[in-house]
Length: 490
Image 1 (cartoon, rainbow, N blue to C red):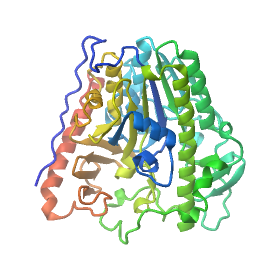
Image 2: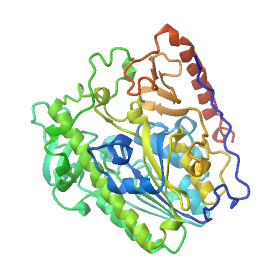
Image 3: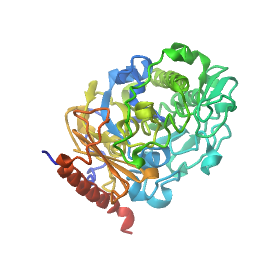
Image 4: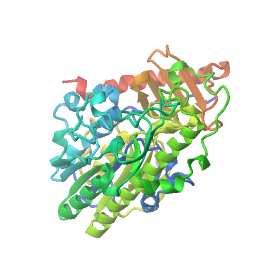
């Protein structure tokens, strides 16, 4: 039986000189348009195989760029994931395991956007790039509600300018229902990190993402004549599931929607720590409410896709499309009823895997199945734009994949779920989940080649003991390498 391969831990060497080319055919001073959705699972996009939720604008981008099928976030909820991909460090390197900025940990080291700013780029943030308390804000200790404004855990040094996009969220006028913890239907539409559906009145501009798209369009028009790094953060499909009511029409009546298969005793062979924090059971959502949650999520995805289309159209109109790297991704995935789990936080593929599409000028469209991490974006995009790649970064440069989609930079992807003290190692065959560094809260092992939906935990079966032992050693070595970084040597 093949044991998991140990990680190659060496950090990327600095690219010498700064404009030395790691990406033939890509210009120096190439613009960057970074678009990130919030709580988006790849399985909700039609370019990733969804036949119910149509996403034509993201699909078009995928047809023009490289669509990555196995990209993993480094933390399975917003705050630590965003701090990681923007800072260039794993969460356990900076200690950002919650909703804070990485700045205190990284000192004067440049974040991803700041690296471009330091190179003379105009850098701007529109809406949520770092954590902003969407939608709760005050409940999460941050004064940054989308309906009140505020910068949340944003990093001011990263940006030339930054813009927040206000919106009514669950307070929007329209037909609303609280689905979570509301079995008798008496609870009003409430805020916080709660499953709420609002088929809202008003057009796209009545809501945060419509305003984000409009501001992004304005900035593209204003700054088309200079190198720019524009980060556009859409808050949908994060709860509450609020979108103009026209986007709900394809998913009505909700009863027609199909939920993922339910398997009797699905949780019996997994540790308590492996049961997600939101489930159909503890949310008290019956089948009707589960289907409405799915329809509300899809409506928000469709709304977000339409806003992506507006931004991409503005880029085309500006004449800068052929000089701009476009990236579309999410901060983590999302459960939509698989295993009776909902939302993020779990380390299953639905929560830890993210969509990623990158269109690089001069590169042919492709599909890449190589394992990569969101942490790889910083060194890769810096390299593609002819900037130096700091040796301290913990991600890897995947630029060769745009010429050869079979190129590999890693044998295993790594992600964490800080709230459950969980760790994921994911390779071609196995998904290994361990809770606590000493595995005291349990282990899960899935043979994803035979069991892609991860229904059968093999960790306790004697014939797989050697696989478990190998992964334990790999995880311990990975954590040592993550923590042994330049942040600790000053």
